[in-house]
Structure formats: structure tokens, C-alpha cells
Length: 107
Image (cartoon, rainbow, N blue to C red; front, top):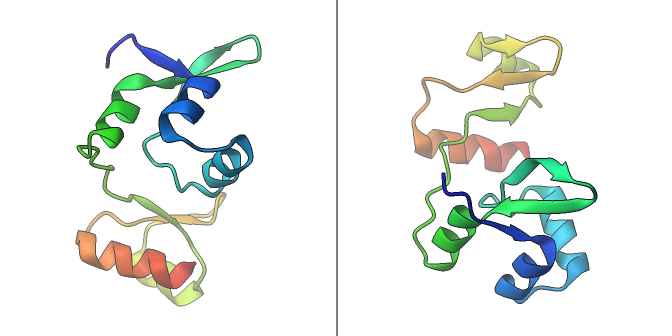
């Protein structure tokens, strides 16, 4: 990981996106290349520059989806990997295509 980072204003400029759209998409989890750096500097939010640069260059490879919100009791029981506290189950043995299919059906 590089030491470079972008502020929210810089990310908005790079993505040519307005503030409202940016925060709506971020809240919905539709900007997977964003990784907020912690701790914040006061109220200033910083994001990893290397992931954003990779996305803009078309080279960003999101990590394999590992967790999906459990919606179906049958799916949860079948998986055998339920976290009772969060209602999330781990998909550790399912191939990538199956994960995408399950994510789409749970939306």
C-alpha cells in the first residue's frame, strides 16, 4: 500500500461526480474501489490513492465477495456458516459465478 491518499474533494474531481451522487453510491456500496483511511484527520476523510488510480486505469480487481447478507433461512442453514450475531454467512466454498448469482438474488 502506498502512502498516497485523496481527499473527498479530489476524488469527486477525479470521478467527475457531484457530491450527492458520490455519497449515495458510497452508502450503497457501489464504489468498491474506495477504501477510507483511518484514523481520520479531524473531519477530513482520506481514501487510498492506489485503488482509485487502478480503477481509473481500468486495472482494479475487486476482492472476491466473501460475505452476503442472509435473506433466506434455507440458504443460511444449507451454508452451515452462519454468524448468529450479524445474520451474515460466509461463502467460502462457492465459486465466483455462484457468488454473483446469489448476490443478485439477495438484492
